[in-house]
Image (cartoon, rainbow, N blue to C red; front, side):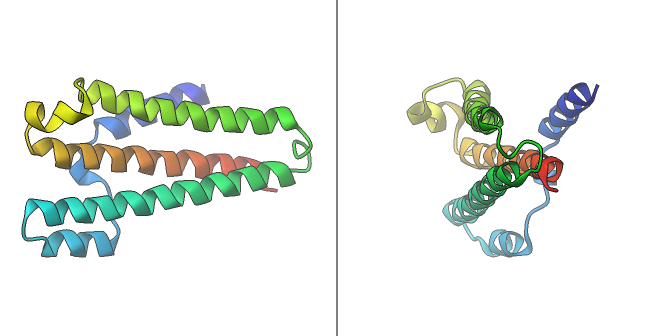
Length: 144
């Protein structure tokens, strides 16, 4: 049942327009000051790097929480499952973006126009935000 609810939640989050995702104040300020498309892209790129750093940090916290767990801490199989889940998430994100923009990356701006740059950055940001939430849920589950 909870798996079905999680899938529904993810589908609803992905259906939400990227403009509705909550941005940090510094990113909002950067976007408000941006005077042209390249400055906007720089702001979004900086936000993506920040989110990727959060994902990396949360993943490390999850590995540590699993290792420290009083019941599962000695279970190498669980660590392998967590590592497999991370790899599966990476494949999912890559496949999602490929489905969203079904042409080679080098041709996407030509096919979809400059709007692709903004939309793809927003989609990547949304995926990374969802990843942070998923990792935080797993950390909570394994934290003592």
